[in-house]
Image 1 (tube, each protein chain N blue to C red):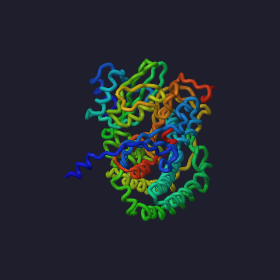
Image 2: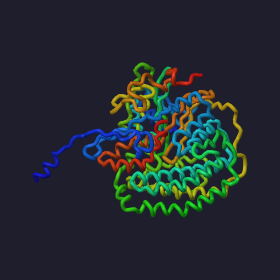
Image 3: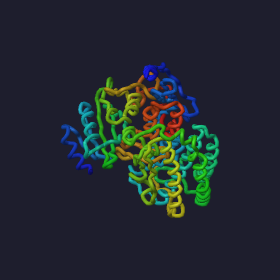
Image 4: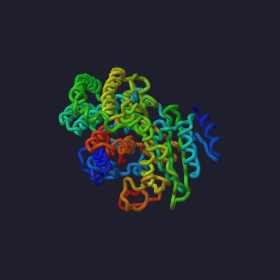
Length: 373
Length: 153
């Protein structure tokens, strides 16, 4: 009886510790100011802005073709999908009729981007919790996708393949063959991911029951992508507001209800299987036709406000354009998925240990340039 | 719920709301700063509207007004609405916070404060988010000038 009284009265001193901006687990230049008591986290305060380039301000002086190039530099792992978001906004505003061929190619490339992004996430996730091998497995498979992109788009990371009105040029003659080769390869390799990491007891102990986010909180914090879906919140933009060719294919929205780190992990693994299935449905049915429609050399959007949301590998990216009818946007806002997902980090980390914070942060899958736009 | 039904329902709550669907794909509601918090609470809590997902919060400099645009969606009814609020005061613009209604607003309002200088009443932690504490001016305002760092055409 006495000992419990002593224990409950015992209070150690709270102190601050810096995590970052050059910490490997923050995946970039993010600084977290942790308030800790022993090893228990009391508060996490993110300090942002180390690589803020003010892309939104730059957009106000750029033409719409130029803006597409800036979006690569936000979430560089979903660069193709970011390009698509701006192009779709401009095309909807101009009411352009986009050829089916473009829609299908964009969807295939979006899903390849998603797999590439999740491969990298999976490798880094393993490394964050101490399993170094995963890094090499993830990068091995991602390399094949980068090669496909290099052949078709001319770049491996910042693709710039979309332009308002379609695609910059048609796909490479090898594209279909190489994509099929990759799918066949990846279908045999993805089960290895489960063998190596998912079923690992140490990994499960590090992730199960850690960083729990309820469905109500996920909605309130504006969580999207696998972070929201790990909490049972159906938030897939591809399902609810289909764009490009997503309305003509069947796929399941990966949903888990546990809301912990392991659930978010499983959602991303499931998403890779879904992406394979989406690509398989489309790759043999790329319609013939033009790869772009002509637009004016100087694009002027009509006066008004335009909003478009797309599903990147990290969640919901929104592009909000206010146009006054000139060749530049009056105001352009990017609603980035990472920014909202970061805001809930304090909520899920408080009460846990620093090691748990690293594990939860790995499944938020933060890309810092996406937060520091 | 259709935009028309939404407009009929919401217009009964608070007088002097302006509704428009022109030049936008959503129903736009313009509200005065005094009525902002009351309208937002009702939009979130009313069982027929139930806008529980604030998916975008943007600061805008309309010159001369400063303001904030809220994009709302309901995850149960799947309808969307846009709420706009404007203030004429450029020296000391102040609006009510909505971060007690949607938690995501806390970070987004800090971003708006950082780049537009709009203060939010009752915000728990209103300070610069991206820029340093000693930064002068608010960069996303249209009248902001920085001869060294900005390329001026």
